[in-house]
Amino acid sequence: MTGPAGLSTAGSMCSGYGGLDLAVAAMLGTRLLWTADNDTRAATCLAHRFPAAPNLGDLTAVDWTAVSAPDVLAAGFPCTPISSAGHGLGLDDERWLFDDIADAVGRMEPHPRLLVLENVARLLSVNDGHAMARVVHRLATLGYVGRWRVVRASDVGAPHQRARIFIVAWPADPESTGLEIRRQGRPSPGAASHPPHLRHQRDRHTREGRPGPPHPRGPDAAPSTGQAHRPAHHGTRWGRYEPAIRRWEHLTGRPAPHPTEPAPGGGRRLAAPFSEWLMGLPTGWVTHVPGLTRTGQLHLIGNGVVPQQATAALLDLLPAHLIPAPAHHWEERAS
Image 1 (tube, rainbow, N blue to C red):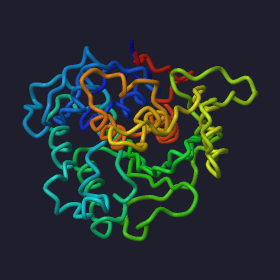
Image 2: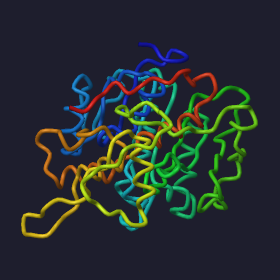
Image 3: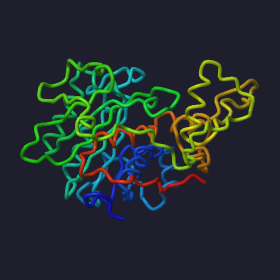
């Protein structure tokens, strides 16, 4: 299958459970050539869900000159150096992998025609904005321009915020000047620290008549009938979260699983299928993968991206000539 503008293949780095890859495939109809993730839990999930795409493992140890270059490269590079949980060292953290990703792109022939990057929103402010500046500078050095914006999972109806920054970049043309800033709602944290050559652009999709991001639904979503989705009947009392839970049930077409399960030592503990549902994944995408413990499932789910959230970001950030109509549906299914 060939997507818009001839984009037919994709590669994936720091893939996790493949949430960003699901969004890329949904929007562009790409076939996944390979993944690159050395986390054993991610490798187990990727092998089960994308059996035709070999996992190249540690991206810093790959000879990228010998790898088939994809049309689209997706990378949800590690957030640990950026997040407060990882002490927020950013560029000073040895786990900062963006420069390794940029080096890999520079060695690919030909260079990918589209880059799709994702991280936590704190990328904008860590190192007083210098981490984001490094990302922009490296992309420019490689000859790319693009756009970025922060999208929350709640922006597509999920019952949690999970703000993430999405960056989309493509080879520059002679009139390009750099990455355009896309803000959603109030200005993003750390905006005053952005390099001066970043251009701010207000909701360009509205000025050009392009509709704003929809509420993308998961691959198992039921057709919209205008009727409320029938809630689950496991007796859960959601309290003040009731409207948010019911909204996500309606948008995904799936009832919320029970949020807890019996713990081995007595009492209750968080149920992994509920966390999976919160992330907008098909039922069993992670929890039905053979060989993954509950701890491994929760690790993957906790580090992932909501595919609907990423799809909405792509719909807004892709240049007009790359937006397909209609968008493709996810082809990977849980089993």
